[in-house]
Amino acid sequence: MPRYMTQFAYTTEAWASLVNSPEDRAEILGELLDNLGGRLLDLHYCRGEYDGVFIFDAPDEATANAVVLAAITPGHIKATKTTELFTVNEMMDALRKAGTVAHRGPRR
Image (cartoon, rainbow, N blue to C red; front, side, top):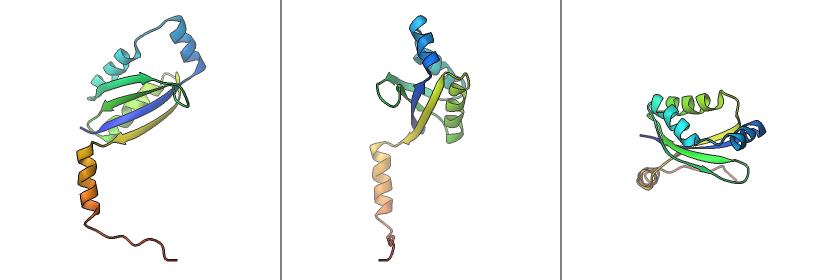
């Protein structure tokens, strides 16, 4: 199953709500993923441009998009960035395949 990483940033209002009433967002996000046929692998919080990151499996890109869209719909997320992830073996296969063809760069 394809694996994705979504970075997210909460709104100020979301942080205020979480400070006033802390809750395990991994449990809630896990339920959303289960309902859409995916699986939450990990949720971490961080400092910087994004407030956190979650890694999940989804059966396809449409489901991965649906997860993010459903997650942001309540309005507590101000920014997201989703990246598809590849295992080392998947990248090795891609590298081997790329090595079978040649591509010319721009002419000078």
